[in-house]
Length: 256
Image (cartoon, rainbow, N blue to C red; front, side, top):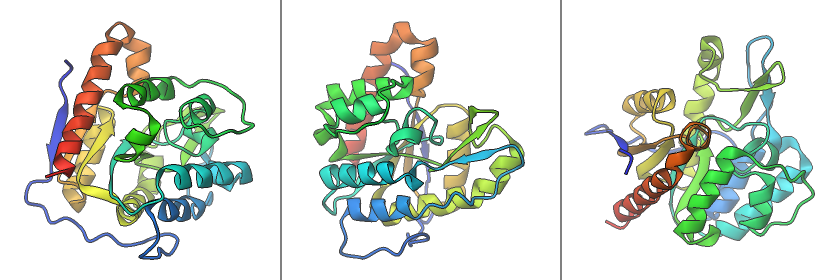
């Protein structure tokens, strides 16, 4: 079983969440608040020259798909454990508007019909293999929310770019990342714990931000799904078991 990195906020004061994007209606469901948040994201985020912002939510088809998704799986007011990736890429969340969800999984695993190009994406393939073993999409999304530290993606020279790959980009989007995490807590993410999909740079970055802002009491870190399928495919089943063990641990924390 792969080791699971864990960071704790210790005695840090948890921030009182507050809306920073679209106004939130207190009685609205988790899904309605999530949809309001994503639909309010602007492509006008300041970025360095040569970097383009990837914002799938301005596409009417994506807006419709995310609306269907949130109504199907999040039409309640129950808190969820946030599962954070880096930022959307061109072939997963950058196409569908749902983190770690490519067009194939959106239709086959989530049961949402669409007309997007049915192209697989490695991270999505692994994540949804975990979701399948967990009990399927309905059971999984009842407890968890797939998201990203930076909900908008970036490209340079036609290729995906992580927000931390360039210091100038990271510095420019840091306030946006902080505000986005606060807003997601506001629409229903639990502050008891969360999961970081990345054990290296992302986990270190997220842990530092959490120490500064006190959002989550515990952060569990798991290997990034793309890393697993690209470089550790022979240990895929072992890593899948590690993911499932962490999901169960978060469930236990939420039920305390």
